[in-house]
Length: 278
Image (tube, rainbow, N blue to C red; front, side):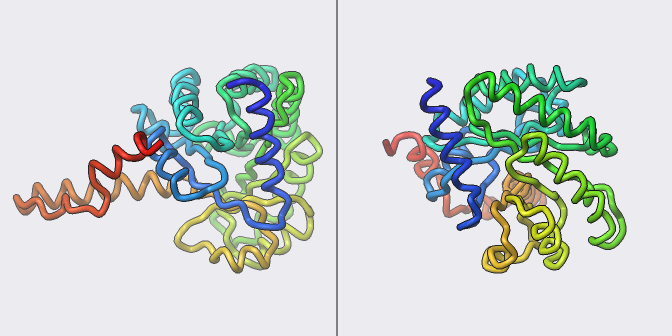
């Protein structure tokens, strides 16, 4: 992808965070899922680290080698004419300098944005806030040097590590969000937070674009819009849904000896047309 096209897509993705309308992002795990989402009129595509890792034969948590992950990113970008933001986990690097190097690689692959987590790889403990902010700053510096206005979504993992009520991690999460925004993040992602009143307090306190993870217990879009949410992403849920559907069909076939479970409203020609309709 040429730099002008990538810059336009990154700028378009940035404008989608203006909080006038929620940006609803489906998380793709391969070119087929990305193309499918694009046909439904989504304005941008995100990737899911878990879904991509599983499809590549690895566990989530930066177990998939960076070059293999970026190969999938390039395939996704090839088949969709949309901004693509990459789930970059904790940045594929031990130090901020390493994160900068990895960020250059994901920019070279064509990304318009990235997610960066503040937990250690594999849902490990939270990093020190200064270390996490330094890694975001390194990614921002890498994007600036590459001439691409990369949209950085800083994931705040407090609720992934709290077994208590949803308000417990709030104070530390706000401290982290402010530090990450000061370091160059464009949006903050308190993953696992779905309590409306805590969401409201978080948004009003940091006054910046906030990403919420969609899930069965997440308030509907209309309610999230009233709370001031800028962006909603689906994380691994679509991948899990796909695998779960196949798992059920396979078990049913083995248990019953029948093939009724293979019935689907989406068939071979539907899949084929994803790549021939142009």
